[in-house]
Length: 487
Image 1 (cartoon, rainbow, N blue to C red):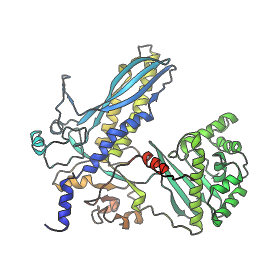
Image 2 (tube, rainbow, N blue to C red; image 1 turned 180 degrees about the vertical axis):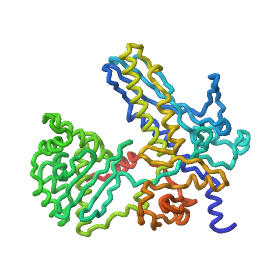
Image 3 (cartoon, rainbow, N blue to C red; image 1 turned 90 degrees about the vertical axis):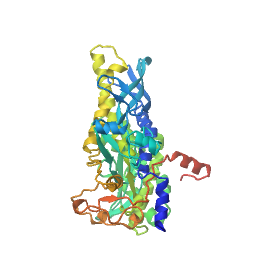
Image 4 (spheres, rainbow, N blue to C red; image 1 turned 120 degrees about the vertical axis):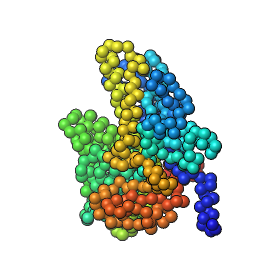
């Protein structure tokens, strides 16, 4: 075996086949679990003066509690397969109950179970030698990267999604559209700028009026006078001409007027003070949340919108090409860790809602309020187990978790490297189904099912690897230290 095979053998000698799935799950349990808790670190129910603070979530290795209540530590995957159990670890959350800002109760509460990926850093099989694995009744050639739910082996199918926070320019009928999917935590807001044939610019974002003029929004964001608005755009002649057309087209002069125009839509029939406050809340929360959700971020949002508008104008004058949505640089692949993050965030939101309900009920019935009585661990466990058993994920995705095929050695390998597109399989979508040049070396050009799923379900190439997402803060800090200035 010479040539290319030597490379393949050496690559897989030090790498597990499912390593990227395992890395993704490890990132989820090490970093993302605590991030989700931080997003919801304070719970304030309807009952006044009661508050719960959450911090520090821990995921333990799988343990088994027998029918008589006795716990057992050495609960290995093979036992969960044979006894139709779920290979899952217990979640513990530090909860502090405050009443009139006085601490009443502090406890590390058990809040539910989370299925554990085999060979991940919370699994008993991690780092074991071939002899130790045989001792535990495991196949030393098995690569992990899947879950065991009610005795069935379940693999999560990676999902192909459009990249967030990336500006895309396209033509739709006679209009030119620049759009960005702005993402912050669980919230995804699509912000669009439309350039009409007459050169006027409109903007839409979640909770905005249908035909909101871009320059009305820029004034509301703090670009109050004409000079600021002109300077926010590029000096190119074509762009400046269109900026002047839009300045003439707007009849709003002050920031207050601009906010009130938006306020009349989001809070109709309310008093002016409330309308203005509500308009500001909508702008902060729903407009480009990835830039920030504080009042101080409004000017940065205004400059981001001017950049998006400039791209639309440049496309109108053929100064730039349309963006290709099928180009793989504009796609992201969500591995098991990311999918579990979406699922846990949804389950945790439900757990908080249930917690508020239990507190309200306990207080109205005049019972003693303590953490043990208000926590219902089933709230998280049931939702996660249901999604993993049926494959019905949040965001209306179906077939995400599938029963892992063990017909031969290759079947489970393909299950772990399948990639599913969220596009509707009943539509023609010729462009999305065909092999794109950027698939070279990343995706197999041959392996895809026949029929309606053709071209929508793809397979990763053997040597291609998906990296996990990284925090951008250190990069921003490094750029700042190098003297890179923001416009």
